[in-house]
Length: 212
Image 1 (tube, rainbow, N blue to C red):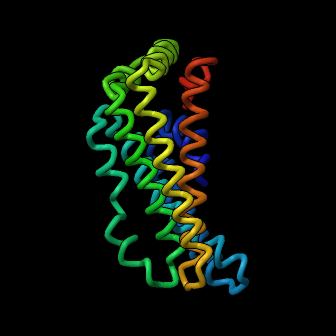
Image 2: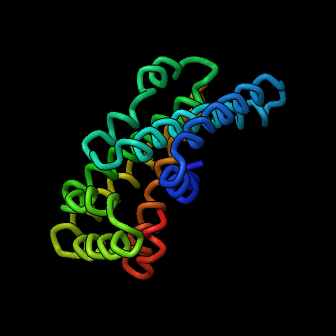
């Protein structure tokens, strides 16, 4: 669920954002129906799908219509933040945990991009054609390898790992939120892996990074 928005949604919204937006209803309905089935596995899967639908909608709204404005990225991604915070103590806590951890990962990624100077490439990349975007992403990735940006990158990566470990520690304590903490830890860890993969692709096969 963390990987899909990067490799499926990103190219989808580029060509047809409206259908991607409508797909949110499919995800949300599927999640609610799965929760109602009654089987424990389906309840958990459905709850995660509901949380994922919030991230999907926010991603579609931004990348479909507002992608030229990086400063709006985080506010748009936080569209369901009040609902997610309010639902942490409800039966939808897995949904809320997934969404909040995804939002945290997005916030950390955006802040890191700003601190390393990569954010300045954003408007140019999204309005460029595929070849130009690949070249720009490659240049941005090379910028990250400079001493100061690299130090920032490793520091932030260490912070994410520390946060994920703290979430796992919380998950080890007996409580009704055990699974919610476990979901949050998994989402945050996966976000770090996706960011690392994107950086690696931008450096080695930039033509593929342009598709993301």
